[in-house]
Image (cartoon, rainbow, N blue to C red; front, side, top):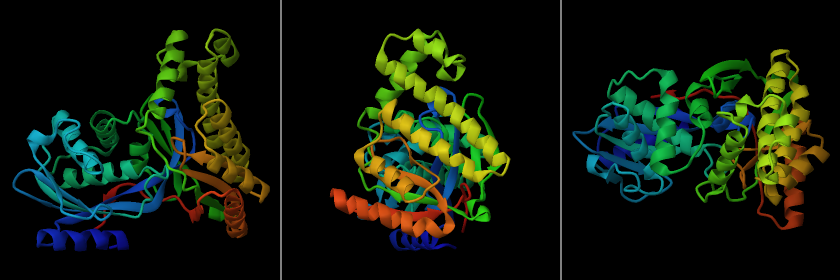
Length: 382
């Protein structure tokens, strides 16, 4: 077992007095390109992080108990009567939300005891919440022999986050956490619920994917995410379309919209879909460096049209580009979180150091750069 799995298993034995029945894990994700397109029935291109959330689990007679190494203290316990949205709070809401979602969709998850450990950074826009949901869901599916097909699992986890926790996220994070494969990015057609494994191996081309955690707080429940989603829905309604996925002639569509804010939101989504498809074409052709300008253009669109960046991520992008990155962009829902930069393998350290120095000069919190590679999706690991 890996370190995070060992921590979860040891915590289970300590808290519950016996070894777990098994350990399951699900990854965080980096979205290579395609931001705020998922809930508009568009295209996204994430890949899984090697960093995972592990859940050691064992069956219990009834009810559920969950302990997290990040929270400490005593396990949070809840039963069927506590599954009303809002009844379980903070991190445990994601666990209770999965149980609630399974039951709402006709499944009968077994009572269980859980111990959770994680290497996925929280608050960084790397989908730590989806990793937790998908790890718990995978564990309960196996413990209860529920037989839920892999393709059906992301929607169950998404419903937990949307309807129980109250974050109106799209399907991307949960799909990536469940269905990604090592050495690949995952093209997700959110309108058709179709996926394609796209080879993505920067190291084979002498490149590295540098992730820079800006350490700026990443808060989506605050309402900004929901505000952007409502603007997109308003734009689609004004155009008489079921979603912005169906926009054909962008200029003609923009000319029909009177609200300048909605016009910018629509322009971002439509052009971002175009950038995703262009990136996929480049990767299919083995031209990884060609995605660099697309990453940078995506960031400019998020900054100018969708208005979801903050000074820390803008600074990280600008500094990485000056330091030699082929392209850089914020990844995740916005308002903080991480930046990704495509760099030459030997330049990752220098680019990270340049960002550190610029953050220090501007008085920002020290960033946390690290190199990552595409990892595997949710699975039993012990």
